[in-house]
Amino acid sequence: MAMKGAPGVAALGVVAGRKVGSAVRRNRAKRRLREAAAKSHLKRDTVYVLIADRGVLDAPFDRLIGWIDGCAEALSTASGDER
Image 1 (cartoon, rainbow, N blue to C red):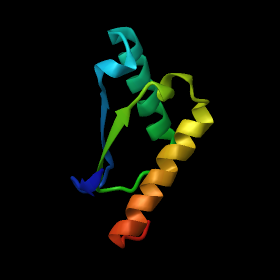
Image 2: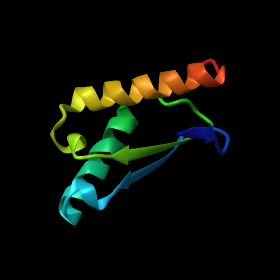
Image 3: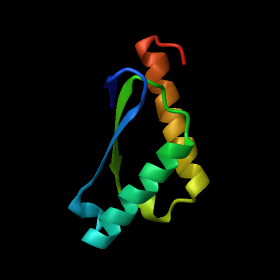
């Protein structure tokens, strides 16, 4: 999900439910998503919400970055925005 946010930066929210696992596993999944998002090309002035599932824990890090980039591009294209 993405929407317009504060000017100048991309805002990020990360959620991991109990289906991901214990608190340690949920926190690890959120840390991995935050780091992957920091290395991806998110559009400025946009708010993103990432929802972790169990696959985030085992996925190669490059795949997470690619997934986030792909989703951001698809959202940008769907909303008619240019990056």
